[in-house]
Image (cartoon, rainbow, N blue to C red; front, side, top):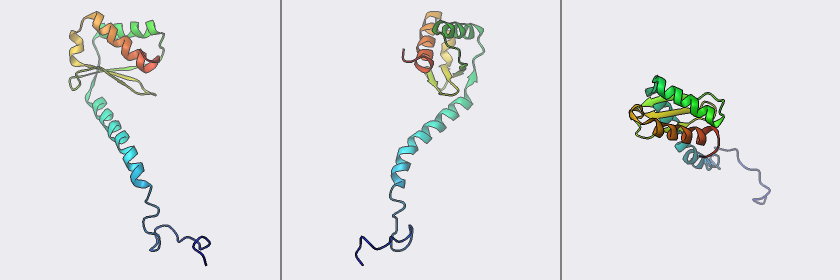
Length: 124
């Protein structure tokens, strides 16, 4: 019987070792950075605190209204990151550095417009 007509051995048997596993390393290599990033974001979110400063909350609400945004955005603060970060498709979250409380209103306004614009309204 020719090789083309011979039925294949079931995956994982002695005659076809590793045949089923040939694509798995590529999938792992592709998905591993995504998994590591997701875990990093979850840890960062868990360690951050909600923003309670009324001035920042009011300015954030004004920036959202200025951009016409109606989605709810979680506002967090953390001393672990020196720059603002925005993430989340279904639950958008804005993380501000702890020093944002000392920023001028103008700087905070620009940061809020930029971050809300990139997440919820296109790219700004």
